[in-house]
Image 1: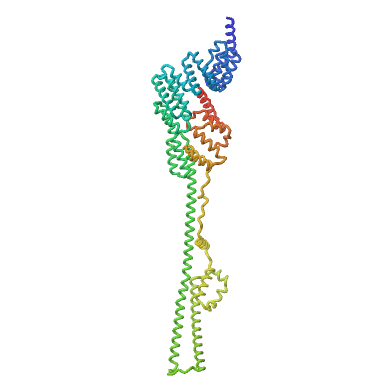
Image 2: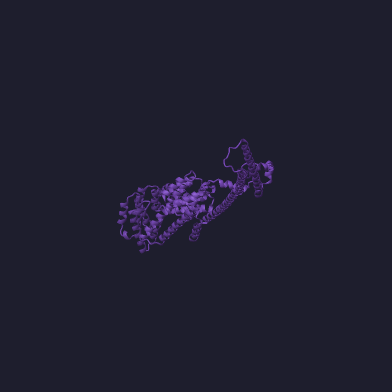
Length: 611
């Protein structure tokens, strides 16, 4: 009796001194702020070791913040205590979960069996049974687990036992969830879901749906998730929640397909189809952020207009050059054609002179014949007569030569006049060569008029001033320019952002060969971490991306990490790794609101996974 009184006094004394602390600790515990609650419960127990109810809350708080070793210390203290109140305060469910986390599976199995023997609460017993079956699965003792489940009465209609069987077979199916074990597991889950609906067992029904959705989210890649959920639906589980996730993943897949096509059109320069597709996407996916693609499209359009303007101006310039070239060639042809006309003018005059000379010679011969006496027998001419004949011939030849010279002089003068009339030389040429202007007689005495005319024409051509445009045109006409590629026609080097966009399309399609070829082509020290982490993201290995972000300088990698962040935020952030990636990203980009948001979400996901 005295001992009981002393105990009551000590408890009352502790409540008077520390009355505020348990209340504060419980308030934090109910708000799931286990990190803040644990020190308060620890201090209460240190001050009052016999306050056994506080042990349960301290152990649970330590379990939630993953301080398993310390939690085990307080569990063993309760277990080894001789006080019935201490034994009663021991929570075997938490005890077994701590041992499972510490990988002590055999001791965990023993404690689960002991907890089942001592438990009088149906809910606690069901939780312990589930833990027991999970331990057997982890120990790969599948036949034993199945045997124990099927040894229970009415297991065929028991939603929870059917659920345990489905969970067990899913563990055996592996990470990819395929093969016979998957089919058998889906069969048991379907039977559990049906039995839950028939018995209005909402807890087990939700347990089945939660587990299947969680497994779908763990699968690598969107196509695998869609296939899995379709198999779930076809097995007879017609849950609205499964249907909702199926529609969500189908919509996400459709969006990714449209996004890949849009990137392809923008990269290839097909701006009109890209604009039409973007317009449809903005209507179809109003919740998606497509402003960046709209800006990119406008930039591409402006660049295209500039290029067209350059091409048009270049084309006009080419046309002008061609026109000038043709004009120059025509001018040159006209000049060339004009020169032979002078020769044609001269030729008739030369023929005329020759005919007149021949006519004069004939007249003289006829006159000589008439004047000479007719002789029957010609006598040899004397020396004197020969001399006379020679003189006559000489005089005749001299007369002919004088006549020819006179005709030539006449002709030369007429030709000179025609040349001066048709082509007036500039004064500059006359000034540079006065000798040519002052000696017309030299032209008149030229023995070969045709040759002189040709030479004069060539001299005129050399001396005539040449128009600059004509000179350029003739030079361009003579030279055939080689086709030299314009610098603007050369393919521009891709920027790292364009490489990133192209790789995102290829990686999201899941074509391993195309992805490998692309990485080889664009491999560099800067791009390799980008390729690796995006590959890990689409392969569903989010943990690898998280490991990289823990070590990397995020501020230098924001330009590509932001793409992964966008993809993560487009879907539902439902894994601890995804929340951690977002938390690290926004912590380094100084977005305090989002940093806090994903820190809290990470804690929540961790608690859910542990419960």
